[in-house]
Image: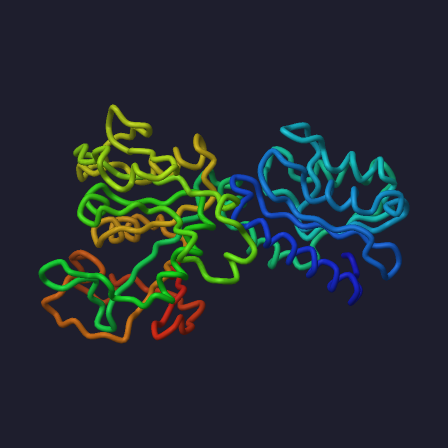
Length: 366
């Protein structure tokens, strides 16, 4: 087992910070950062910005120049070993003459995992793996899940009053949550590869489901200009073909994928209940559209079905300090439960205030 120094931890933490800077632009590629050091000095650093552009290691090597000879490279993901849209980074590190490479984690793609490390070791480079691995995993949950399972990482967003209502009895719901919470939602949207909703939600709300740069938190606006942000694909379940071109959904540049049995961009079968097959839909998005991270904004029916079919990886729940009464519209449809042993139990992993609202991050108990 490798023994890492305090300096190693500090450098890998810096590489992870660099990797985070790509979270709004790199999809479908992973977020990767790289730092190159000579002794106690950083001589090169970089991060992967966008698919098809140079990888993190290339940026760091360019900055280091001749100082890469005999240096140590800290990389948040195993350097690639194959030719794709860019040359293999493992080969670039070898040609630059680095003496040691420390990786946070191996490539999660089972077809290539370990090959970059093997290439480096065959060239006589000392390689250590596993430094801040859990932190590196957390940066690429969607990419890892797609590579290992062929499914996207699914986040279900919910917003309700303190008593669990999403709208008044007459359907009015704007706005339950605060401007700060809505800014937070925009940031989550911006990190996703796609947003999933239903035609009923889109038609009822005339929703665009696009990232509105002007509503993003100020720190994101300062780091990314409007044209830099990647708009997620809007994926709309439209079994009854309710979508039409006059909707705001079609007034933005972001692509739209309709999901239906036929005559749609994504065609899937119906499940035994006569609904569009959600598992097939998610698999198609991951395997054919390269969607790593799916953000879901929809009503109680879709939310309930996703949870029942255990297709949700994480719930993001905003609770506003408001009471709307039992005649309002609830978060979920009827679950038909008759015993407490049947209830869906959650693990609350994070709880924080977003303006006046409470944001819960939760996962289903296994």
